[in-house]
Image (cartoon, rainbow over all chains, first blue to last red; front, top):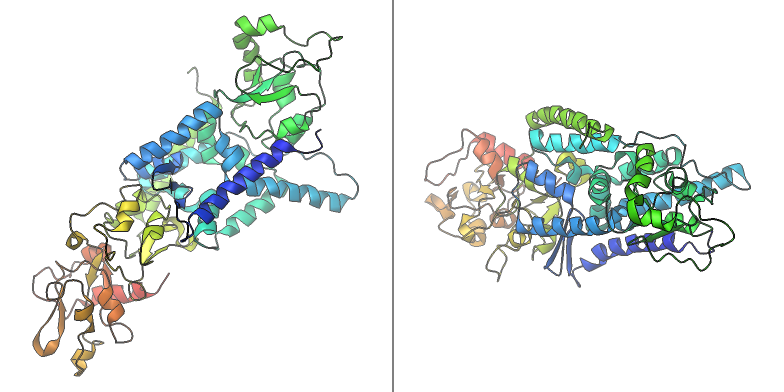
Length: 315
Length: 221
């Protein structure tokens, strides 16, 4: 564990800056940003459109405009290249719920005294991950038949932004409620309910940027700290590291990097491509775990990922 | 793709569930807000509006507000409260700023200011001071299209030509009576009223239903 949780605080600060940009940038004096997270316009030039909100709008009777195509295209391109980074690095609700977990840890420490047990992320209670696809499906169903964009209207993500940009609002109640619920069911919104996350997880699963596993160290470290740290509750070690997968391709991985801060032996790396791992600190007395470099370069990828994928909780 | 995964099953299940919920949502009536210039038909508007608030920020006279979350599924949609802040037809601009800002097609471009059809002003003779013998032409003075949208008839009584009136609400704000004697009926409700006068003659005595609806709508939400 690194002394400074660099990744954890990097994604938090990024999300905070993103929200601050919307609020400060849209103030009458500056006014170079307009809108909220459903659809934003930067410098009246760069559009930024929530793909799910746009989908709802089109299904509910709207027409696809150039702004929407460009704005959605921008986010889709980013997601295809980098994965669901909106969830991990930008989402205002994600930031609130992430910090809420710090509160929860603090609360647990106060209640139980001394050191709190590791947060129940891995095997803790939770709703099925697939539920978010049901939420996604029903939103699209309502949009098509009922002609109403429910997600744009009441989703806590957009409610937070609208409250921040246009003034506080009673609906923040839903956010407070969610925060309380997540003291008992950690990050249940992101893991099991968020329809936008469901959409991004499908689009970003095969992205170029991913959590990579050092083949030389995979299978040696069994501390499970990455699993405990993962906000999305992904069994990083059990399902991927020990199985010598070359990358963590769990659809819920949003590239937040929290596991990297937890990893004591740099087994994990967030990056592009599988080569160029830093081997200088590798303990050469021990045999490489799991897989050889050759195996990984040739037919390794497909065959190694197969078991990992079948074991991964099918969302 | 091989056999459907659990995620696909969940998705299809949700789709059916949502379609069912959508049927009931469709039946429920929608609110009669006064929408910004260029707004498409209220039912389509509620669907197409992406609830980003760009129109609200673009408005040079700050006449638009965003519906709060208490508005339920209409939360985040823009509306006007003309008695407090009417549409001032963007002084100095060629086209409405809100329409230019809208990223969806919920607000559609208009060729001319007169093509805007947010709603229609309706004179309430029971409240209008002219009917009580006062000499007043505040609404006529405030109207961007005097003698076209509002004309003064016999004894100086104002009458609204519904086919010209764009529903900007400048007359509503200018009206000296309290409560205002010339409220704006939103386009969605005007069309919905079967008794709405369609003839070209100035409508002084509007149908009671339409006036009631307008007064109800007056309360800021």
